[in-house]
Length: 263
Image 1 (cartoon, rainbow, N blue to C red):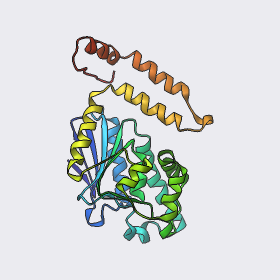
Image 2: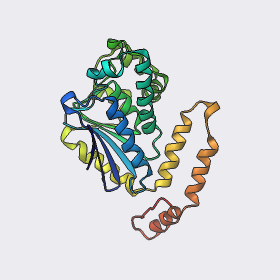
Image 3: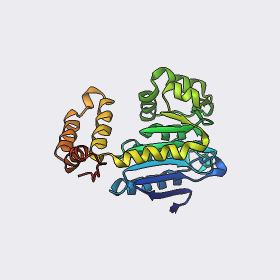
Image 4: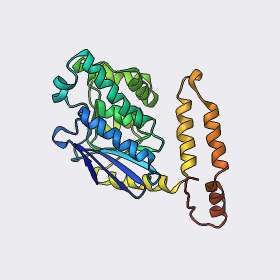
């Protein structure tokens, strides 16, 4: 376990964990925490032993409850300070949204504001049955940028995205599931086991196949003029040219579990 200010991280069995550790404020995030999170993610991205990343919050009551409002006077009091803040937080969001490996938001309790933005950057979102979701921007006079809104719209569609922002109210876990905001809702006591089962399956599967799917889905969501179909096709070809493809066929014929190396 390593610690950077109020951020914790660990690597365990092919899984990298990013833990927001400010439980006394329901894991509200300061600028220092965003910057530390990006450093952790940059390390995980270059570590071949890490095949999937789980983001979660400490304390059992919240995933991330948004920006730390107590820091606003120091970090976001002027237009210039807000621009600088946005640039740094956008870099962290982008590092998650564009992360080269699968990412999972493991959500307990409150997932509010920037916490919901963080969750929408992840590939999968698994939450407990007592989780609560909201973006209270309209109650604070905060504007949300294009990238964050696009990620939300890509997941839940424009009508639900507008409802989330227009009302600024909290949505419970069943409502989040109905919107498609979360992949699964599980009992509180089963969250870690459920997520571990998913990470175990991902770690056992072929990394090149997973990478090709992640990139291709990302290209599907781009505008036609920005879509790089050739990049997606090249990753598919790389799968068929890999040793893992041979291992997968051989393991199937020998009726054993394959051992993939990502090569």
